[in-house]
View 1 (cartoon, rainbow, N blue to C red):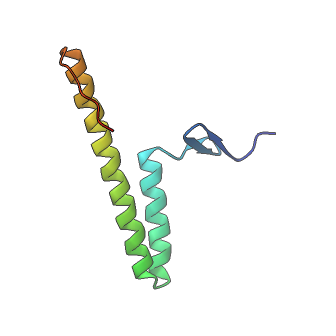
View 2: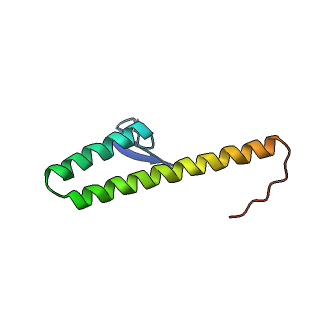
Length: 83
């Protein structure tokens, strides 16, 4: 019998659904925010939505940086990595 919730590296799956999928993540945040709003927990709801938006923005900027790095490497540019 396979567990319902399992982790595979950085990927979390729940019943065969990938928790890192953007559509599933947005829908989950929307459902939880609606539940919080129905119970009058508007500050908590806004905090959840703000954090979700910040994470989405950080993910976008990370992917954008990787694309720029890949393009620079493909063009033969010398790349200085600073972490």
